[in-house]
Image (cartoon, rainbow, N blue to C red; front, side, top):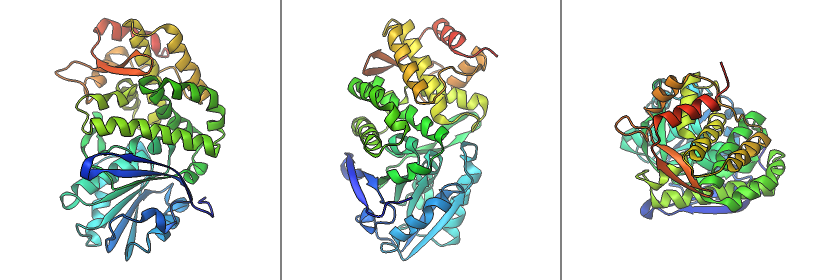
Length: 369
């Protein structure tokens, strides 16, 4: 639960000219009015959360917002990736219209990546754009999905295929919310932390290898460093490529295979981070087969993922099914599948690959049916 004495441990700034904003990392931030200083002081605000998070953290957040907004409404969505769709999105619009919310109304996304993505998309769409703030309560959301302005919903034929780039006014990462996160979800978040090492920072990868037990124990100083460094890396990439014209695509390391796993199994069967972890192993094996990294580097990542409590062997969907699903990936162009590969440790690039090689990666890297 929120700490008695609020403390800011770290701040990372996203530099996007007039759309710049801070990522605030600390303890006891939700109920502290100082956390929200500088957010537009609209008459109305709406906290969007889910049925799991609402009983834990909606109260402290509403308390912290009382000095800023005259009315704070709360809308509670069903929990789970399988609810990231038009029907659930309309629950947000229903409440906004029911309460006669205007263009100044501020939306607060209190929850994990699903809540954050849907709240951001609702904010981008309602009256053609209202302000919103990300308040991520999962590790995955704190280090990845809440940062950078990607919003959207899933379609049965593809993940995150309907959405908009729309930046929040602030991201508030209260580390206290991680105390109530189930271990499986915490491990899933570590997948997105681990990905930053191979693509951008080998020193950070080495730090993770030396401190993974501290992270698994949720030690405060280790969490603050992991969240802070992850956000710094993502902030640097987003500042140079806000709309994923090129460089930002490297943040999707493991996601082409991972999204296929999620869609192929049915959303919600595997957590996003679990699928991305296996996706990174497949993408690294592809990098190896293309002659970019050696087998020892692949094994290094596999060991770290396993120490983080993550699966490292992908489920068998059938090679053709994987290829079918990956062709609707957002990086695909003209039917060609683009993969984020590691061109050398600490550096990533987007490339195509011979289909025969991709088939071999899938055949060798998936658990037999």
